[in-house]
Length: 310
Image 1 (cartoon, rainbow, N blue to C red):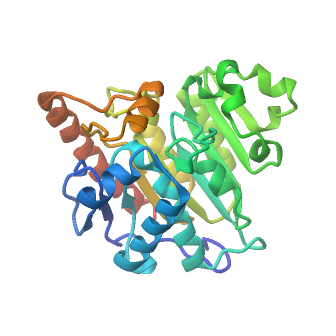
Image 2 (cartoon, rainbow, N blue to C red; image 1 turned 180 degrees about the vertical axis):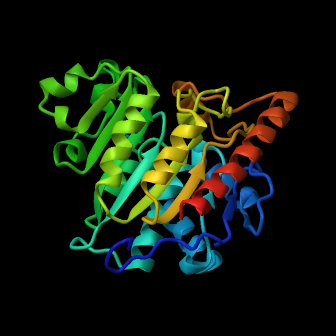
């Protein structure tokens, strides 16, 4: 099946790219690895101002392989999920998406990543920036179990993309009654378990042949699948495989984040912000080694599934 006018699925054998910002991603077959930790980790991790993000985008354009020459991009910890935004922009430019021939984005994540952040862009706000792009038709964020979409944090969510039909939340066991009160019920899909959510999501994705950018944050998975730096959801590996299968032949770009890494911010304001989000960034060496070994195996499995369903 064609991905759509002006777009083509990624070649199954296209080598992955590792944006090595925190030294958390293990070796991957055929990888192109960009060593970025020394120059960019403190500056970019968790969040940054827009001038710094523009500088990072320029660096990516200069150092990454041509879009047609690489496959899935690995970002490291979920603290870097906002780097999906410049990667989506690269996909749009390379594949020629327009408002008339738009791109869909599917995100597996335990958080909506549509939260208010007045200092630029961060790992919890990038979806809102992507939803503002006229070349993006719709964004599905699936696997949410965090309290970020509950009544206590409702005010922190950007409501405009939900109201305009640019964004949908797919959650498990969330209290989203407040959304119905505000007339946003159409954008919220809550389920009792992961099986029910994934079945409904896959049915909708399979019915729509739109080309898709897939972003996977592994904090959507249960802790006994992989361990991350963030509070985690309940999805299983089979749920990811089902979503990838529903998008067979339509994935035109993808990234993976949610590695586990240990880091102490040098700047006090980032320490304060990450602590306020309940983030775990300082991990003992033995646990880190064990968790990263599981992560490495899971990354290889994800690459195999993306190639098999390409």
